[in-house]
Picture 1: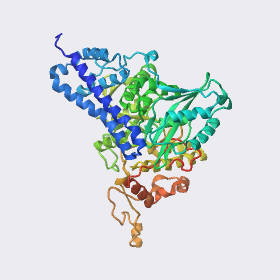
Picture 2: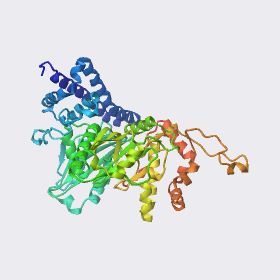
Picture 3: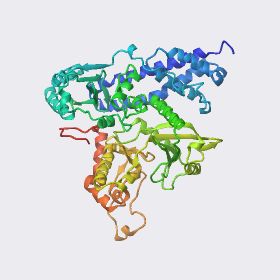
Picture 4: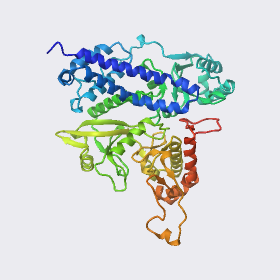
Length: 576
């Protein structure tokens, strides 16, 4: 082996690129406080999209530097990359973002080589990172011991987490939060001398809110704690509410939300802290929720291969109406669906493969307002053949033969997206009680309105394209027809010219590709007349073109509409 082979140089160049990415990531993230204090709502959305795009941009820059500085024959000699990996491990061993550094290395490797070369010798299929070393960490939380005086503890919290902009009325907010504290927890907790409040030292920012996140705990029990803060322009900072319910906190960190901006010195430790207060969340989702979505993807993949190795579960077709663009399969016991693009679409679909890919990628960069499932895009998944139900594999090979290929005892999935598995809304309302149907259809209407508030028009709004989460929230998950709301031309159906017009097989008026007639929604969305009447009662304004136009105008006027990820207690302006 030639001593001139540049394994250490390549490893150093990769790590230099990672440091550059981390610094630029920090710069965007650290600007969140100023944007919140100055009520720069549009800039907040722009920064969120820029931070997501930054990763691939920086990977491309490192790839270019490597090809410029390393001889091609050496750079692409894959058999030598175990040496690069070994050199890289020695460089990251003392870092506190080492798990992210491993994922970064994997991204660089995959940008240089075919996915055929993926193996644990050359890259980090499995992590090499040791367990957390708490004794070496700097404390990242603030502790408060009320000693029976909850009000004083909360008062100190708001003093410690003050902003350049003053509080609007801290005494009013303290009175309300103290009442909520007492209502949310058992009576004995507030009197427990060992009661503590622990909050992460940095605020979390997303959209128009800032959040204090932590826990309330005694010797034997704990509750999650989230305190949202709002900037009421011209009035100051409002302490909005106090949340201790695990399900509600879980929704705030949901896979349907945009990523938080938060200053994190030691990512693994912060994720461990979040995992302690949200034990039902997978660490992949927690990493993703704070902007490290690529590492979330790594943790997801590791969980998937571990599940396949340790269970007898097989891939089966996902329940629900078969899609006209996507074929969807799932894995029992693993709460995920896998979506592949069909080779041929239904004639009614006026999109092509590239357009579908663009639409799905768009979802990553927009504000999902809790109503669109996050996606992860994968290339060249390889699964054991015996992990597929024969009927599932036969269907995939029939509808997507260019994407799903059998290679000996392996199934190659060349390209797919993963999403959280949900109950399709059409199946949910078929089997639900009258109360459940009413609640689901009400939330379905809210989902459409909140997507519109975020400048997203779903396009195909059929119930089969929405799902119901474990918390009962309705979420959109089929993206091949989405577009920005401001691109749509909402129209009223013009009156017929002659009586014969209404009997004609073709409309008597012109229809352009982006024309939408909300009056047509009722029979299109609901075959069931009872459901149609119920939805009209709950959200009849969605059938009015003027309603949609008013939302468009608000967006064009630069207004960023509030969509809160939690129930607002004792507030006049509840969730949009």
